[in-house]
Structure formats: C-alpha cells, structure tokens
Image 1 (cartoon, helix red, strand yellow):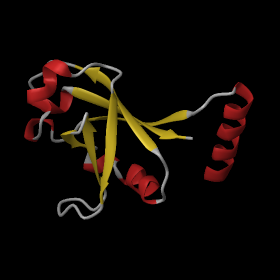
Image 2: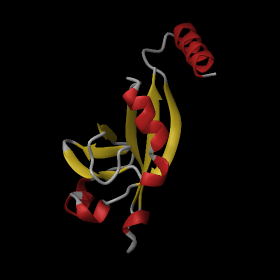
Image 3: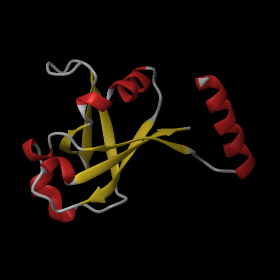
Image 4: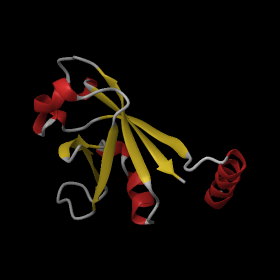
Length: 121
C-alpha cells in the first residue's frame, strides 16, 4: 500500500513538474510547550512557519520521541499517543517536515500550538 501511494505521488509530482510533494499525515497539539522554549518564543512564532522534526530514539521517557524545533530552539514534542507512525517513518529514512498550523493564546499549553506533519516526496 505504501509503495503504491509513493508511486502515485511521484507520478503526480512528475506530471506537474513539482519539485517536492508534501502529504499531510498528522495534525497534533504540541506536547511539552510549557517545559521548553515555547513561552519565551511565543511572540515570534507565526502560522505557516517551518518546524524541524528530530527523532530521539534514545529518549528515556519515550522510545518513539519526535522533538519539534523552531529555528534551532526546542519547542516540545509530538504527543506520545500520536508519534509512533511518524517515528517509524523517520527510522525508515522517510523525509518529514512540520509547520505551525495554529497559534492560540490559551491557558492550557496543549491548546496553544497546533502542528502539521508532512511526508515529503
């Protein structure tokens, strides 16, 4: 199934002369916002900005940990309940990307930042 999807996307990319194709695979709140640089960087964050996803297979709290960074600053993690598939794809060497989908001033840190995760072809 995965190879069929990849073949289809590559065919679409070739026919439209696109340089890259991004497939949205996940939309999640940011976990750990309150424990990392999120509060400090909040005024500078903008919807649509690129987020870097970094695999942390040796994380002592979660073997599927995927760290989320903005301009080299750690903002938090993909939620533990939603990171397994992304971690597995990263372990296979699949290119992934993230971006800020929503920013919301909210008391609950889980409601502050919504991330979108893409597989890049």
